[in-house]
Length: 173
Image 1 (cartoon, rainbow, N blue to C red):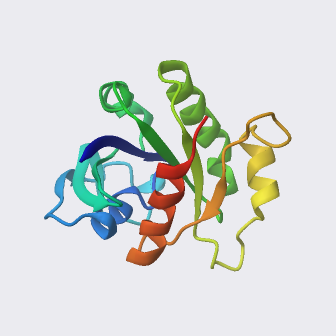
Image 2 (cartoon, one colour; image 1 turned 90 degrees about the vertical axis):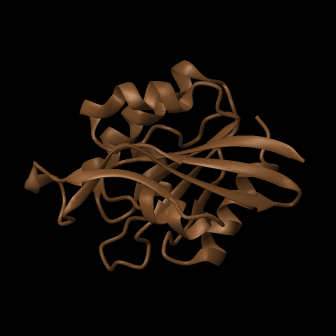
């Protein structure tokens, strides 16, 4: 069985922890603390190191690591993306003020690894969600050669998460 290290990155509130929980066949390791900057989100806790889960998918052993969303923990991004085989950048479609930050995360990851990745749009069911084209343009991947797949994913629904991971696993650079 082939082991793949998969990293789930994204902005605060994009659904990284929920994604890992929905995907995992084991109890997820979560390293969270109370949110100190209440202006960042409506949630009470935030990931400060990583989330970890595992999933067997199509005879592959996925080790899934969720990153913190806040840039003050970017040292963890460095640790987690190292030796990654694939990653997903989650972007909340209803938070356009976070798109430039999503672009920064994308740049950060791509400067460190050259591995297949996809963009997962979350919160597409919200009335103020932007289109995939608007998001792609905002994060700087519209009309580029070798653009990654952009898919809608609901981190709360296991089948949606499994579908996203299937797309990721089958995607090549």
